Image 1 (spheres, helix red, strand yellow):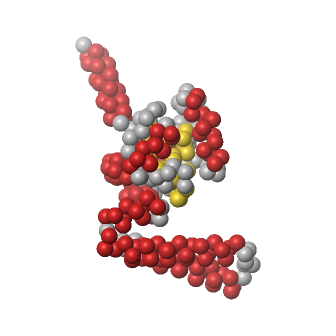
Image 2 (cartoon, one colour):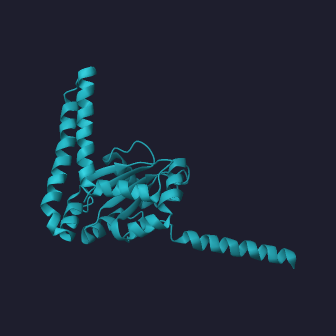
Image 3 (cartoon, rainbow, N blue to C red):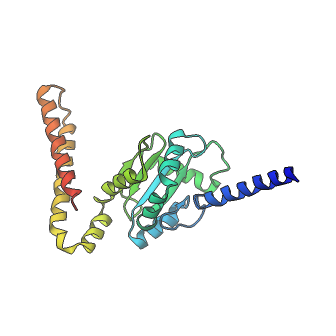
Length: 228
């Protein structure tokens, strides 16, 4: 009887564990806001309908240590789930060792998207605008990242998207002009640095000072945006 109780307890624990993790499982077809899916096309369609950004998670789910760290430390946490449910379409583009994890119909498409967005390592989080095409930013893993810190990173990227700007202005019409001006200032600061780097300046003391000045300009513009 005691052995039976032990076995029963083990079975019950297994069922509970499965139930606890069931909501984190990746959908194979269809898309819901804030839920991970492998169905890129369905996510694109819903993103356009809801006017929400997308985040593509290029991962190696069964072998990549950093991927597992982010899955457990960020994406499995309630704080992230609560945010994602209202703000983003989530797509998993998996490159596992176990080939049974990803349906055959998605394999070549995953590789095409990997090539399209120049992904060279895992995990890579590519953020797209609501059109499902325009890349507006890219995020990565980190040992110290939390749901709160990753949400702030994500907001920082989305803030500069067409849908992000439209959404903010719609919710805050009285701040529209100041917000647009802050966005332009941030974009101009980054463009100035990129244009200067494109000239391939030599590394010397004078150019180091110029680089630092560009960085300070970007930092100031970013800080101003965070006030909104």
